[in-house]
Image (tube, rainbow, N blue to C red; front, side):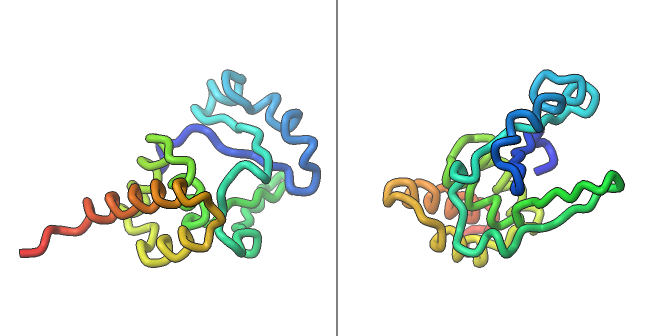
Length: 139
């Protein structure tokens, strides 16, 4: 999970400022070269998230007085399974393997997310395959 280098950024109080906010910390910036990660501006309409995700945002307070709000891990995993890119699935499966994601809670949240039927089928198939890889086959 820690190998992900792009951090999605959405200025909650000023959505229009997203592009300007990442100008100095985006891909190929000095920040990216120095810290090997970068910010990517996103729209709040972009990710697929389960109901109630806003109530589970996790605040991180920085010494500068800035507070960043991060998706709760299970909510982030829902979005990653819905998007379905290889890097997203690697992130989620690493969380399952490390015990940071609870399979039962993640499955519940996957069902609680608004998705098209084919999107849900693909996301659930990927999730179930990842969980099956973690469980030893029955004797």
